[in-house]
Structure formats: structure tokens, C-alpha cells
Amino acid sequence: MKLIIVGAGSAGLASALAAARNGAEVLLVEADSSIGGDLFSGMPLLGAYTSLGVSCVKGILTEILDMCEALSPGGHPGPVCDWRSVVGLCLDPEILRLAILQLLQKYGVRILLNTRITDVRVTAGVVQQLLASSPVSQTWLDCNAAIDASGGGFITKLCGGEVMFGSESGEFQPLSLTFRMCNVDYPGFLRFIRDNPGEALLCDNPVLERDRHQAARNLYEKGFPYVALAAAGKLLGEAIERGELHPCTAAFITPTSLPRQELCLNVTRVSGVNCRDSSQLATVLYELNGQIIRTAEFFRKKVPGFRQASISAVMPRLGMRESGRIVGEYVLSQDDVIQARRFPDAVAHGSHHVDIHGSGTAQVRIPVRDGLSYEIPYACLLPRNLANLMVAGRCISSDRGANGSARVMGTCIATGQAAGCAAALLLKLQKKNFRELDPADFTTGLW
Image (cartoon, rainbow, N blue to C red; front, top):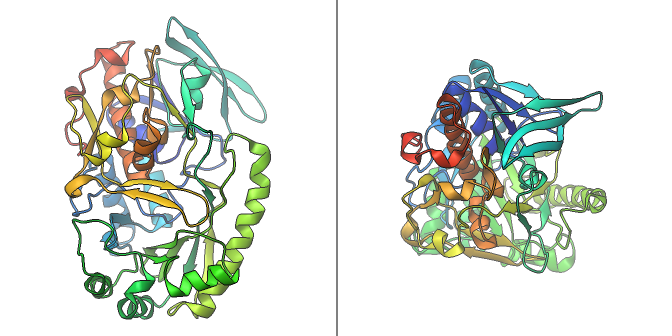
């Protein structure tokens, strides 16, 4: 009884590990020549903790964190509050990569790289086979169950399911390319934030500290530079006005490795791109590459703590905030997210604020009420009219506002492991329709 998972980003990896740990035979299919997607970028795993620091994603994530700690004791910051809006899980991306590969091997997950699913055979809503196409061969894969963790609902669409893209007017959130800098003077940078709190995005969320000066002192005292330099601040704002830097909401900075004194920077952006049109992406890549070069130089020259810093890594792939999302049995709404709504068929929790980036310095940020988490119902993972296919990750059934929260990696891990656990149970019971399962039978310990 075989489970095929398409996409080896955060959702697909969590699905594969959870399913294999529960006894399923798993084949993980990835179009790239490596696994991870954005997971190994150095960006924080958002949505794994509420704004108040309460863990809301456990299960396979707990095992991943235990493996990271075993490989590099005390080498990563862990959950850190930015005193703006969130608690981000900050990890060393290289150790995270090693940890996940160790676990994939431990649980016997088979991986196909450089392979795309280009066709399907579906009978009466049941996916029978997937056509795996590599540069050297094409093979029809028999399928008892499948998980679409493609990031854009592409397998669901191929199977005849409905997928929505972008906003109602066809707009997508900006593309980015993250990079990392090492040999940063953490204390020097944090002293600058402590003494100049107006330079940072702080105190967005009403459940956190409301005094900007105290919030900046909190950052300094904790010792982890998980902070966003604000475009409205003097340092970044004047650089944007002079044309020294491109327009952006903020420079989002995440600590990654304590031994390397490394940070991940999410600063670059290009808006107005149709993410479905691959012909536009090469031009975007050139522009983002230039933004990285100029940003790194600006930080070395102008930002305290970065004088001796150097670029240590550049993400090999474009960061895509938004693509396709399926139409499932239930469509998670923005109101569900910000009201911290509960559902009887919950399979996962999310906690990140509604986060929709626009062009230039524009960004919508709406926190979840009272610093709580919201529940994601099973029905959001079930494409309409398809029996043995589930989705996980960014492409779950949601409106654009809800997707602005559920798209982050911590929540993708949450929906991924839920899908993997469901699929393992479906195969164990030899059923053919995910709707025959009761979520209470596979969600224990997931949050």
C-alpha cells in the first residue's frame, strides 16, 4: 500500500516523516535536485508558537528539534520573541537539513529527485496512478493515496480539482530572495536597537509589550537579534529615499547559528509578477540578485554590528509567498484566523498573523486575537470530488487573508504531519476515501 507525496518542502517533508513513522510505505517526489524548499533558508519557522510563546505544533516537529539539538547542542536560538508580533522558531538551517535527512533515512522514506508529476489517471474521483517524469525516463506510479504538497495545488489541478491563484484581480505577493550573513556582532547590533527603538518594527501586537523602549531593551537583554529594521525608521527610510536601497516594508532579520554569529536577512522584493508565468522569473532573479549585493554592502557600511560581516549563503531558489490554493470541503477564512476559531474536525493549529505583502513598503498585518492559535479543519485538506488525495502546506483550502497566515513554515509542518498521519491510517485500514476517517483517530499529540 503506497503513499505518494508530491513536493519536498516543509509540508511534504512533515507528511513523509509522519506517515512513515506511522508505518506507511512512502515515496516522496521532488522536482528539484534537493529537498527542503524554503525550509533550509534560515527563515524562522513561524506559526509553531503563539505570540505568547505557547507551542502549538508538536508531533514530528518535536522529533526534528530533538535531532537538531543532538547534532549541534546549543547551536541554535530556538523560539525567540521579536517584541513586534510573533515568536519565531529560529534554527540553524544546515543542522536542520542534516537532521531531516537523518530522520528520512531512519523511517525509510524513498525519494525521487529531479522528477515532476506530469499526468494522472483518476477514476470516479480516485487517483490510480501518477506519471513521474525525469530528464531520462517516464514511469507510471501506482497510487493508493496521495498528498499534494506542491505549494500551489498543482497535483489537485492536474486531477481535476479547483485551484484559486492570487487575489481576485490576479495579483500575487512579491517574490523575494533571502540570504545570510555571518560574523555579525550580535551585541553591537542589539545595542543599536536598544538605543534607537524607532529604527525597528516593535509593539504591533497588543498582547506584547506596548512600550517601544522597553521592547527594545527586551531584545537586547535576550541577546538574539530577531528583529525587523523598519522602512519608517531613519536608517532604512533615508536609504530608500536616496535610492541606495530598494523600497521594502522592513529588513526582517533572524538569528540562525550562534557559533557562526549568523543572521538570515529577508529584505529583497519584486512585486507585480505573475507567479504562474515562468518567463518572468529569470528577470526577477537578476533584480533580486542585485538587491542582495546592494543590501549587504549597505549593512556592512551603515548598520552597527555588521562591519566585519560577510555573505555566507544565498537561497538557491526564489521565495514565493503566494501561488495556488485549492477549493476544499471548507475554505478557511481570514475571520477564522484572526478570531482564533475552533472546529470539531481540527487537525492542526496555526498562530501567525494575517500577513499580506504588497508593492513597495506596503504590508497588511492583522494578529490573531489575544495571542491565541486558530484551528485548521480537516475539510481544508480535502479537495472537492477527489477521494484519496489530500493537500498540505501553503495550498490548503483558504481565502487570501487566511492563506496569508497559514502559508508560513511552522503551519505548513502542522498541516503536513496531519496529512501524513491521515494517509497512514487510511492505508492501514485499507480505505479509499479520506472522508471515511475520524480526525480524532490520528491527531493525538500533534499540538
